[in-house]
Image (cartoon, rainbow, N blue to C red):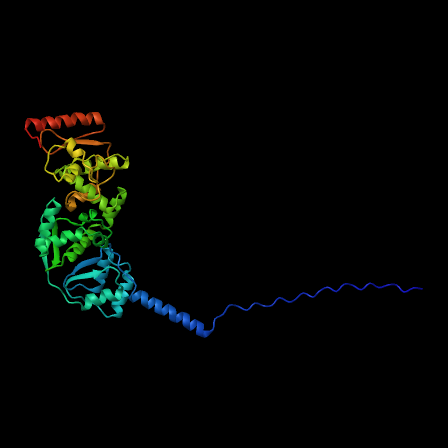
Length: 363
């Protein structure tokens, strides 16, 4: 009898036992290295990293007698001069600075906490003085008076304002928009300032003008801070009646939002350097200039006059209405007639011209 053939069962491969993965771990030396790196970075950030937030190349601040470091830190934070109040106070605590010497200080953009506090604590105090810059609409007249009050050379001041690199360093201004920084008022300045310091100082004061409330109002108008001042210069050139300023501002804002030309007479007269003229002729309107708003859409590149703060505030609270045109009244009162359509505007313009003719005003 034949033996039954036995077929061997195939060998099932044994499952390899999964190796237990070891958890990620660092050696004590690695942990020490990381801790050292974090400590060095934190130290650098606290002491050397830029803690300035202002737009201008330098910031001038007057510290009165008895001011404590906590008060200064809060003031600098409120004015958007420093980014971090906490690190500024920590650094002051580490340097054991509590009270401050009275005087005016010039802080440079990009300084860290250690540099800021060392300068405030150790720098030589330069003598300062109060000046009163009178209200002059003319750019040229304002610069002449400012150079006289600060004992600087007027020509050097004008040359700096024409330097693109210089105006850009002041806070991203052009050689035209830089005139936004000038405003009449009382200022505390160094005695015997350099021309570049005068511009830095005025740019600093311009930065301080734009507090949180004014910035919010500017955003509501969908205009930059400089554009608000440029618009205010047009409004100020149109009327001396403060009560009409928000209404006239509303006319121009309606035109800007509807992509219309501003067609502002004062901008054309500014391009012709004949701001005192009472009539705008075809000769005026034909000039090729970025300030001719009869030919160019949008706002001109810079303010056409020096604007007081109150005019800027009147523009920021402009009247929301449906007027697109306005014209001075023919009675020479300085007030205006406002209209919604062009035909009505033409009637008002005719009344104005008739008023000039009666008074024999031809320029």
